[in-house]
Picture 1 (cartoon, rainbow, N blue to C red):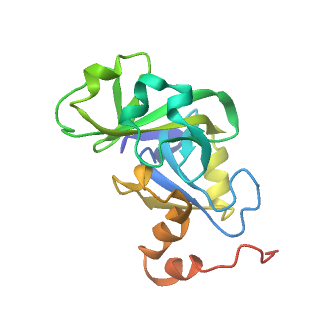
Picture 2: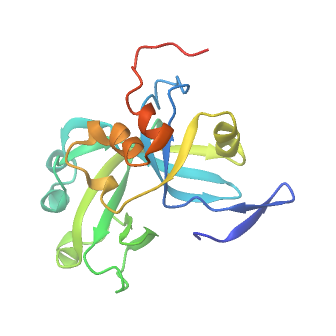
Length: 196
């Protein structure tokens, strides 16, 4: 429930659902190096997100044929994260975000997750595009907050199109550049420089 305060360890926690986690250059976990993660859930028990900028070469048509017409370019499967890589999470962008839609669970604005057991034909008029992720990124209670405190992640506002960019490899520098100031400078940080 976005924006609702929840208690963690006796202190209030603001939900980060719908926000971006952008890996800082100090984060050297290969699962998350230069990644942009959209948080689809964040509550007292932990957080769940999908990596937006790790496209595979596997066409959506090869995995979920019925859904392939709704997939945005590149219409391939994305690596959502290291947890349960055999499972799928599907993000969708609604054309009319005010109307409730069966099987759609809002993350932020017009973007949410969609239940893949629903007939895609029923959604064709309501959905402006989907992106399918194999696996997800998950954190236990307090784990993500700890990583943010340690400087592993920038927490930034998402734009509705971030999850559906045509050039996902450009998303990390693009999100940083639009912040301006020092964060824009981080977008030019060389990938092979070791930080202590």
